[in-house]
Image 1 (cartoon, rainbow, N blue to C red):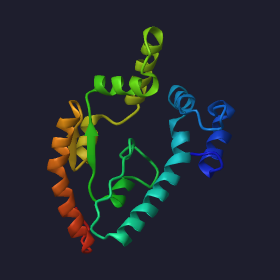
Image 2: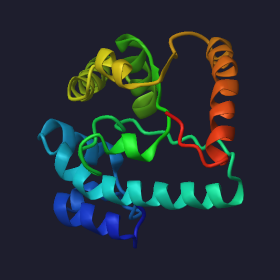
Image 3: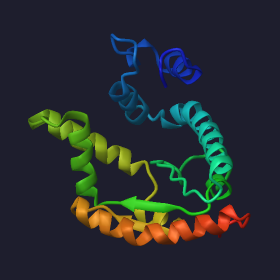
Length: 186
């Protein structure tokens, strides 16, 4: 999504120059506002997701050639929601799905902090509303949990999160070792 890239050009062509900052970079806040507030998320996803999926596949294959038993983690906020790659296309792309979730209020607070940590008053209310609108357009955590192999709850301290990851990692590493020997993990 950088200037000069095909995805960048397609986004600017579709959403207009109002999504470009003075330095030429994409204004992700403006783009997100248009996509979510105007109901154009699928337009944006149709541009971004195929390119992201193709690049993920390239990188995963490259890592697999270098290190057959590697654990490759792909962070994707909309992995289970994407319509690109076919129905349940993610099932063909990944051996295991780890869902990291947090309570709604925690997610809202984190969104506001990421976008404008100093927001208060009307701006704070606007950002909180934006976060909730975005979450409402996503699959419920209950549905995501039912489609995932493992669920990590990121509602507390970093230490608590690390504890969960430390318990999950050996399970994933063992599965990767079996997969590296040619077995598809299910």
